[in-house]
Image (cartoon, rainbow, N blue to C red; front, side, top):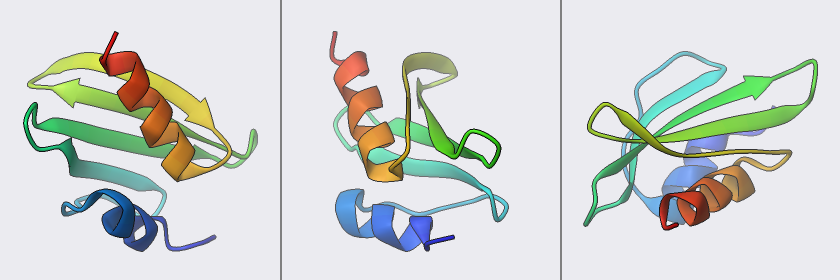
Amino acid sequence: MMDVRTTLEREFGGSWDGGRREVHGLVVDRERKLKVELLYSPSRKIWNCTLFYGGACVGQASREDPVDAVRNALDCSND
């Protein structure tokens, strides 16, 4: 599995907290302070991304590429 944390840090900045298959806590939108929860589904081979503002879910997306999952979730959060 590629180093998702490094890839997303390079793309969006931020810091991480979580297990090997889970990525939590990256702040992807500094103005709104949106945080990422990114989980990999090995059976479906996709990344499930959920964005949180405070404790509320504000965007979700599932994609094969983790960067695309985060970008699509950000697009959903702007609606």
